[in-house]
Length: 355
Image 1: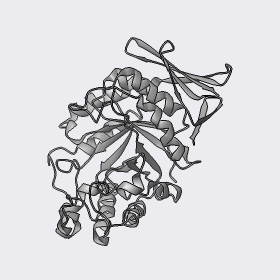
Image 2: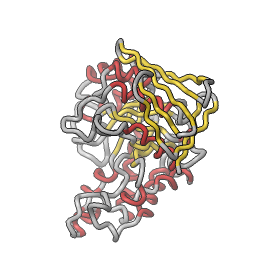
Image 3: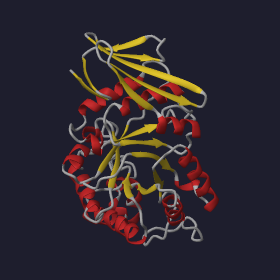
Image 4: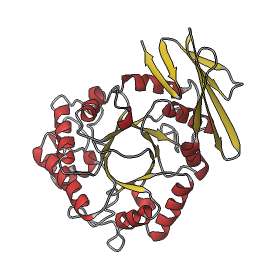
């Protein structure tokens, strides 16, 4: 596997960069937040680079090339972000599961060897022309099997596509954005095998905690972590969202939830995080980058995290006792206990498992 230093990244949408001034503005924002990696969408709305396969969004502006030059001058890495599930099928109607009937949506048919080869060829084209620091595949999955009948398709075809792209990567890291749970069962996305078989260098599970009311969903992240491949934490980068992606208008998250999610990631021993998406304010991005954690050797095993968002300080405590995991927000708020959870504390590392 290709190794990188700690990753503090952000997904940057294609249309955000219309000219060099936009690049400067976004990199100023990301640099102020101490981010290290930019994942730039290079295909949505037309190619944002000199492509051998796609029409250009703006033939007069090579957004990817300009971004790489400007980011490297600031010691920031750039990853080319693509959507194989949607980027490939438009080349050939035989590569689209929609044309198989049965009410299926438009989506790449990964069982077709030529479609898989085109995904590898697109990657090779980008690598041959640009000094990118990573190649990032999103939507490398099928539609939801709980909604559509995909019994004629197999997860092995998706894995073959990933292997084909990896074969052309050389020393450039290959990353994938994946479903945090049920990837194989619901989306035919066998990312555990991709990681453990080294078909990818880093995996980015999208842990987008939802719903600002009701249960405190960052706690669910512990259950996700317990099911991820053990021993590969250094090649797992947690995908976090600064917005409520499940609500109309995608409003910004409550700052305390942001800090809570950060706390959990800091203690999971993972390689870093990537934020969805570039709409995050500078203050929130700074919180992602600057949140710190420290052990506290109090009775029962306690760990803490503190952070500032703007002028507001947040403090989170984790307590471990016979009842399980106790999670306290801002010290003076009510605790939440999750039964059936086993937690061990060693230094700043907290290991979580569940029944």
